[in-house]
Length: 277
Image (cartoon, rainbow, N blue to C red; front, side):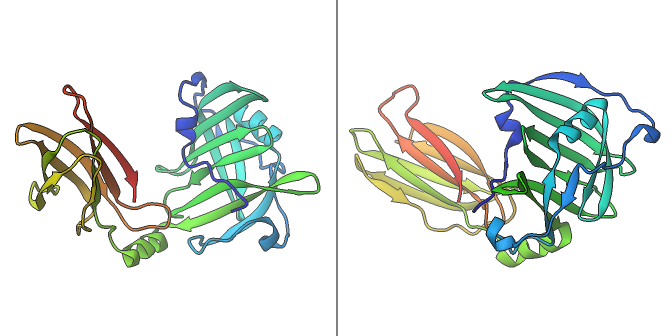
């Protein structure tokens, strides 16, 4: 893909010190968009790949300097796909980087009880999302491409309708639970694995004998949305527990797959790792 979406801004900004928290001001203090976001007409296929999960999109260029200056004053208006959203900034964080500061803004949408915005500015680049809440019930995501238009970085704003997204996910169905078991120890081991659902009902139970260096993959285990608990007994004496979440089989995610590794460590004989299947 030509564009990169920052899916975990908060993780990237771990350790950032909050240096400003704004108190509210009157709506009259909130500027118009003032050309912060400008829609452009381009050949989309030359700039980014359009996903079937998008319920609308537009190519834009963004004046991040204007955006940052307005946000630093406490309020900013963004024009997203023809809609103007006034955002009152609540928290501002920054982190020093190789090319200056990275700025992270969070705020709420004025006029909406549930509306919120998360914006991350890195020089000319803007990442983030705006969720206006009711009655829009959509999410506007902002990502950048690696292309330029008249010298400015091209960004894409794509919208996802919550109801349509729910319908898409329901059509995909629930991603089955799976786990893998590996013996990295020099000895043979016996392991019992039982999985309980959110009602504490057993949905899977099996006992394995595994030789040194071997790996065992589980069958696909049907699940419903929710959290599941693994109860693992090693050599009929040591008991361990782990939790995973079952989710829809979406393009960019699904249920958690648990990896269980037996190692030569009497105090901590099992390593756990999980991934989105």
